[in-house]
Amino acid sequence: MFLSLVRVTKLAFQQFHRNLWLSVVTISLLILPLLVINLVIGLGVVAQVTRDAVQDKIDVSVYFKPAVANEEVESLRVAVLALPEVKSVDYIPREGSLARFRERHKNDPVILESLDELGENPFGATLAVKAKNPEDYPRILAFLENEQYKDKIEEKNFEDHRLIISRINNLVRSISIFGLTVAGVFGLIAVLIVINTVRVAIYTHRGEIGVMRMVGAGNWFIRGPFLIESVVFSVVAVAAAAAIVYPALNFAQPYLNNLFNGANISLISYYNRYFVMIFGGQLLGVFVLTALASFFGVRRYLKV
Amino acid sequence: MITLHNVSKVYYPKVVALKDVSFTIKPGEFVSVVGQSGTGKTTVVKLLIAEERASAGRIEIGGWDITRIRHGEVPILRRQIGVVFQDLKLLPTMTAQENIAFALQVVGAPPQRIREVVPQVLKIVGLEDKADRYPIQLSGGEAQRVVIARALVHRPKIFIADEPTGNLDALNTREIMDILTKINSFGTTVVLVTHNRDVVNQLRRRVITLDHGEVISDQENGKYLL
Image 1 (cartoon, one colour):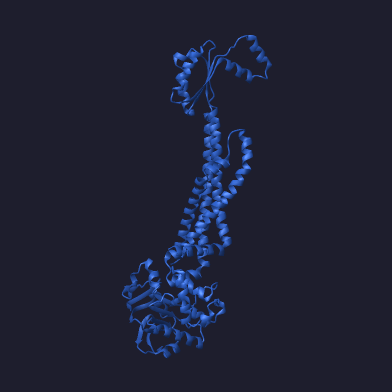
Image 2: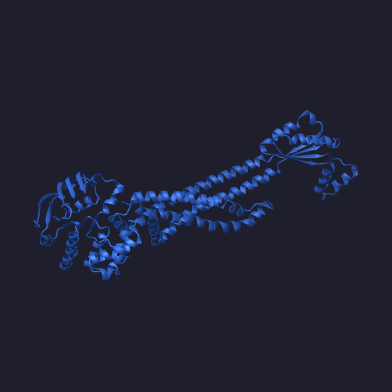
């Protein structure tokens, strides 16, 4: 069994070598859909980071009246934090609100002078509430409308980024559909090329195949080299795709850093973390595709 | 024992290659199947190695009804039958001994057995000293002897030679016929398919004559009739 496997593998490599240029063309056509799939994966990661960054910016700022005591603000903080929809509540005391205001307008002397003329801190405490999901904000806002708290709140500021998130999602979805369609078309072309490669390999090995049939070689011994060749195609194609993807990620990284200005986005780290899943999945996919194409080609063109 | 019971073969659409053919070949016999071109001789060979299926009738080899042979059983049948065709089918990129060894490798024979068997069969056909030559470096007769050696590696019970002397001169023909006689002397059933009158007449063995797909004569110590 092992001996036969070794001999079948040897024949497969012989076929690969004897039709070297055809093998190169076949592998090239298998690489194309893989590159498109990796592009879609990369865009997905970028979109995810963008979406997270935008989501992170959403919060409800609750500005209290200056007269409201810190204990009352604290009790509301505890009540809001108890809501299942709430992820975090940041408490900014009156002094903190004043300091933040000064910091924000440090280049505007008119505003700072006006503030000084007032002689006292005009700001109340502030709570910055973040929800677990953007969809939860209306429920949090409704809670803050409660009569018990309404009179103590000066203003609520809610900047809704859901439209932006929705646009990002739509864009990612469109790119994914387009990318996968292109990958599918390339995949289909690759399948046809693999079938043709099998056909040519059968032709160039008709001598050996004839002898094998005549002397009673098993059907799987005759067909095996073609299936093993499809494994070789898959492994080489995925390895080549990885060899192209990594330098491309290296090249793109500085541009991504500039684009996201400080956001923690490293495609290489992502690929390293999910290497087995990404390239293992691609290897499995390409292998299934080429094995089916080979199987079909062998059934169609090889009479045993 | 090889038995054909009322075997017919019709190729699509209506080309009749064999019509109601019946004969029996006993173990260890040397039988020549003769006839002019297109009389169905090669069809008989193809039916015997299950390369073609009979349209009607039954073929038995050693009690095995090969007209109902399953696809996966064909290699098992072929390992019991040594076949030599007129078109040599030697692999040009392999030496004589590599060509012979290849026939053993593809059926999973271990290297030790290959090392034992290849010199033995080369000796039977008298080519021990030309084992390392490529087909292009061999004469027509020598190449045919390599093909015979390759067909012998599985120690077949039946040996079928389809026009083995078709492209050979008288001297090489004589040598090939001597080898076939030698193989038969080991107890192997030999079926020789030919249209070479001289070969058949010199053998003085059983002759089955086909004409237009039908058996018109079956004689012990027969002669070429047509």
